[in-house]
Image (tube, rainbow, N blue to C red; front, side):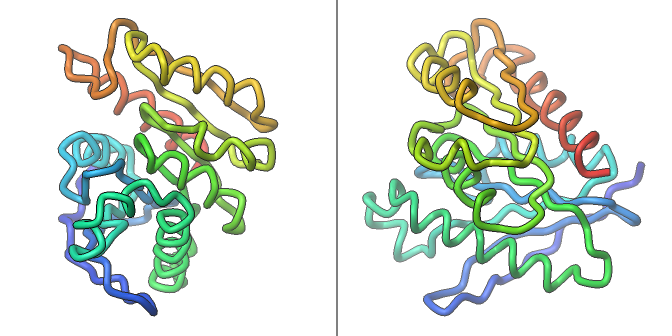
Length: 212
């Protein structure tokens, strides 16, 4: 399916403007909003690769910076999960207004600390249709996990032992349609041959199923 090229967008908030890029194929039934990890941005090569694969399934994608350039200079902000959650909720609200005529299903794809924001946002935003976590610090959303109702996929590297343990504990607490996918021998960044490709394919399959 032909992909629509990405467009730069500015997400206006009361406390600043967040830069993003959006691409929505024709007749896309859903759009996936990405929440990057600490120290990353809308330019994350891993997220951009996953977004490309997701768009090949006929879905749209929105990648944006969770923090302004000034905010990102303060390292503590990168781990301020309530702040990151608020930004993700605001971006999702902005997207719904922008795409009101299309009225797409919305999915959230969180990485590392962004996964905690995605899980929290899924309990605050109406009608989130799917969540995917990649190497997620899901323990940082532990108090709300049992309130997540959207179908949730946790993807973790088999060699990322501490994060894998945290994800297994979260998986047990989730009370929704759920799946835990372990990429064997992969570390936190999925840098080995074929590992990122596996992540992207599994995530794209999940969203393609849930956002139709």
